[in-house]
Length: 251
Image 1 (cartoon, helix red, strand yellow):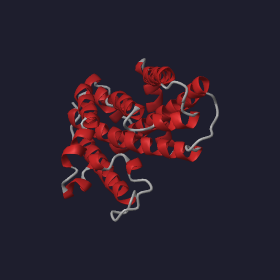
Image 2 (cartoon, one colour):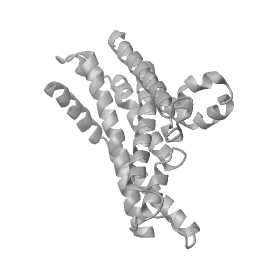
Image 3 (cartoon, one colour):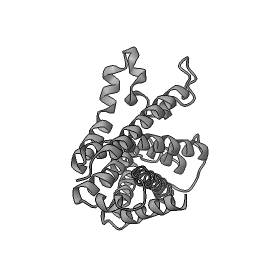
């Protein structure tokens, strides 16, 4: 366990030393500030409360989608870049199995996603508090904001897992970024086109946004069924990733 923690820490340090590491946080900060300014200019005298603003930020139809795209761009090369630069060979000559090395990269990617979401929500609370006041009264509670963060985290992890798999399959960071971003951007269109078909409930794109199912205990089981579908797809992505990484020859 200690060795694995060291591998994760090593991956995190490698990520943090890149110039692009802080660009991801800077993009989210400027996005939050810009979004706050637009609402301040257009809302008139009816400003949202601090919690209402923070909750809306985590929506997958708004700034939350920007979080996912930024996470995809940054994590797409976590394996592909190693292949392109040839540094993956130096990792594999160590006394660690391929599965452990790949798992450490995936865990580091998930930690990055969590840190980016936490940074985004803190920036949203600070910006909205300064612009609209730190009053937290209203229909939105801290629990609602926490749920929004959780749903956004799950949503982003699903697409990062998809991107992680394609990074291993293609070994090209450019192609991986393109595939990941296309999947996110086409999600709404696919939902609209396929929603009338019964088989669509088993498709990943129909279940990624768990906030749509929260509190809706329908005959399909509310949030339970989409959670199972998403978990199954993520497990499939990881199985393909690990099997491919272990079987493929490293040139």
